[in-house]
Length: 495
Image 1 (cartoon, one colour):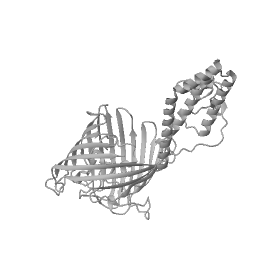
Image 2 (image 1 turned 90 degrees about the horizontal axis):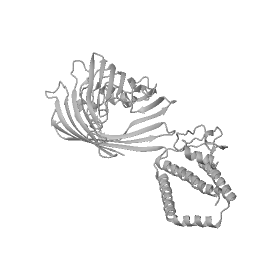
Image 3 (image 1 turned 45 degrees about the vertical axis):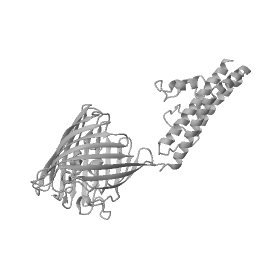
Image 4 (image 1 turned 120 degrees about the horizontal axis):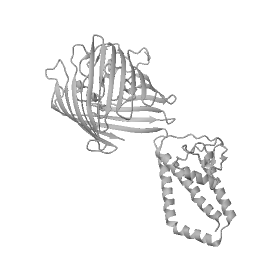
């Protein structure tokens, strides 16, 4: 058996390996993504190369370098693009795959024709075929099953551009020491369905449907992931916006509904925002005196470097009903009766120090109630100056914020601060304890005070359980007893 014949046998698995790798990657990509790729179908004249060094975008450090080197220099059956690039990181079309495979098969045919095959070699090939017949049949069956499964996924997929994501939060809240109106165990829940569409792979159109009912300890800003008492599970559009990149460092967000305050920022810095059961775990100055969340708006996120980002946002509400007033198209964006602006400069790292400074300006034509407290915040302008800080020591973090606000007739200072432990007793968990003084925005009125300890436990990738203990002093001048102590349990399902 000649050397050329053995070279041909070596080229066969190389060519088949390319075929299996590419087809497997294509099947996996079809099964895993909902984004349709639009390949350029124009004719491309591939260029024959004689050395892998001619490919300008292939480096010796690349994991497939040796395989490419062998196929190019030993068999001469790998071609590049006219600009001497291989483009190994992009998906290939079926046309490109056919051209590359045909080139390798031509080399195999030439090698076999030059060497010839004697009867003993043919007998050896037949014996190997029979010996591995069961394995080949198994492999063929797996490929057939994978192709059938992929075809089913394609036929039954929800959309080629849209993913459906959902979240449901259930709360059980029991008062140990009560304030008026918070005297018995209560249940609160919220459900969300997010329709996220992408047309380029870098943009996102989100339409969120939300429904919920119930909330507890409203004078202390209530629960973080719950509906509003009296909603009665009526379904409505909570978010409606489109976000897209403008170059490599600017992201633009155009909102028809649902974005205001911290919705415009890259990060709220404080790690309690999200895991905490009480809404006070997140910096409250973002919503305090702000524009309607039912308004329309525009936001910009500018990344000056990998660590420094500037967030800008504008929200226009409508009507004179305060925080529930929806945007009024007849009035327009810039003549809305409720408007808010935000600018936040962030320093974000994957390490020890994360911080931000923020400025908000809010205008309202009328007074409005503060989250069900029964106390009206004044009409007019509210200016907010805030700083946020997170010190991450690896196993634990120390974080908090402070905010100074001025308004018609007075000023106000609010804050929260605490400590948290990641992976406490189990991987993925977070134990946190924080305290805070909430905004009030009413002159000569004390600020509510709250303390919460929580322990977030991810049971699996679909379910998270968070028990919490919450103490609060609502500082209500209308009540003789305005302190309360609650136990809460939140179950969060994601799908």
